[in-house]
Amino acid sequence: MTRTASAPLTLSATSSRWHEMAERVLDGEQLTAAEAESILAAPDIELLALLDAAYRVRHRHFGNQVQLYLLMNAKSGLCPEDCHYCSQSKVSEAEIPKYNILSREKLLDGARVAAERQAKTYCIVISARGPNEREMKAVETIVPEIKEQYNLKICACLGLLTPDQAERLAACGVDRVNHNLNTGEAYYSEICTTHGYADRVDTLKAVRNAGMEMCSGGIIGMGEEPSDVVQMAIELRDLGVHSIPVNFLNPIDGTPLAGKSELTPQYCLKVLAMFRLVCPDRELRIAGGREIHLRSLQPLGLYPANSIFVGDYLTTKGQAPDADYAMIRDLGFEIVEAAEALR
Image (tube, rainbow, N blue to C red; front, side, top):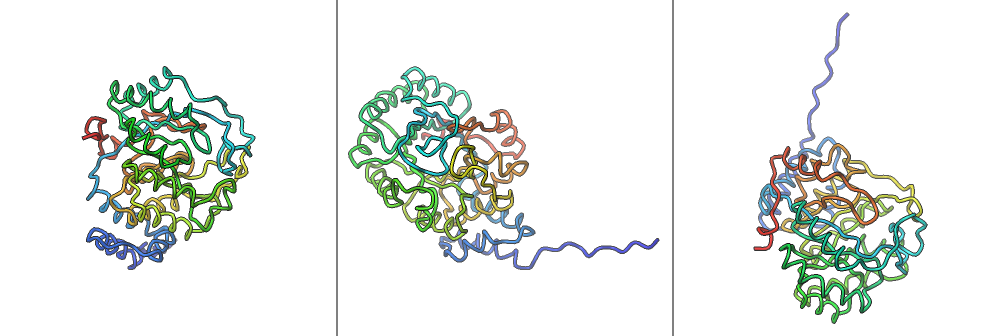
């Protein structure tokens, strides 16, 4: 029986465009929206070439270092906003713990865990439209203690902030504030109606004006178009955001987006590569949903990205820390130590 050899698998000649694109980015050029959208539309056969191009940019700015973060859900549920993706929103029927802001002892214990897990940054998060006075004072009190005892950077995620509240956070030692744009401006009203996209931008500007670093990213897979993802990436670049967490929708039961699942590992990796090439020198973090959507391809995500959360998320479980350490070690990468990150 004669066997017919199949034609050899060859990459399209256009795959070289990713390296040309990376060269231009390394030379200081900014990608256009059309170029960024072309990354998201890249054929899967070109994925490895695309990741290689993104890695060149990542390596220029961050080498093979990986920065770890730990999240503390300091106040759970009880939120008056209607963000459709969130298990803590007023429209969610998800079965989650609900409690007011944690005690000093519990917040300190979370910082201890962060230090033990080699996280460089401890993220204090509350569910709220914005912090009330009691919550502001709790953060102002605990932040100096955490920094003194554990030498961690502090990122606060407290909802919408006024300029005065941002100044107070900066004064007590908060290094960075997280407030995600979540999606592009054109799509924002589809996922939240109790506040607008401009409110989120105003909070980021208040953070920037107070002298703190801005942390802001989004959630991929909520029904948005690729153009919405690109618009968000360009907005984050132009705002000067320092750290960009990229979440992939975890369609939690009881939320309006429950059951929505349209992501593939390949598309998620293209999103990360696009963010790296659009925002070449910004910290890029693979955040919630990486375990669900990247699955066995998680390690490839660290070729464009340089940061992950270690441990659980706000109301959902994450990968075991030991598995994260093994993944980083097997890649030949190294974890940024907290003391090094603060220099």
